[in-house]
Length: 100
Image (cartoon, rainbow, N blue to C red; front, side, top):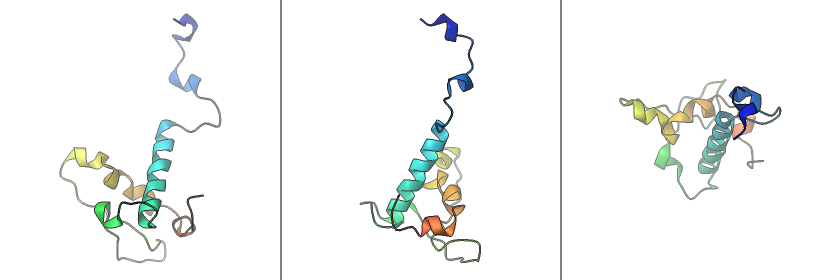
């Protein structure tokens, strides 16, 4: 169909300034966690997450606990894949009043 595009690598299609699919998924996951934990969603936080009670100076007040998983499949669930990214966020992001 487009023979001139056959030998171009995927990175050649990427337009500068656009996020990768992985970056967009991670952002959407973090926004969804924010909505769940702040009551902007019909889903309650205890449905997916357990809040940590370990408050250190480097973490925020809404730290999520990482559950042990025996199956590799479980690592790809929303409630598991988002925990590390959420816990790395700075305190001012987690304590924001809105998604914006």
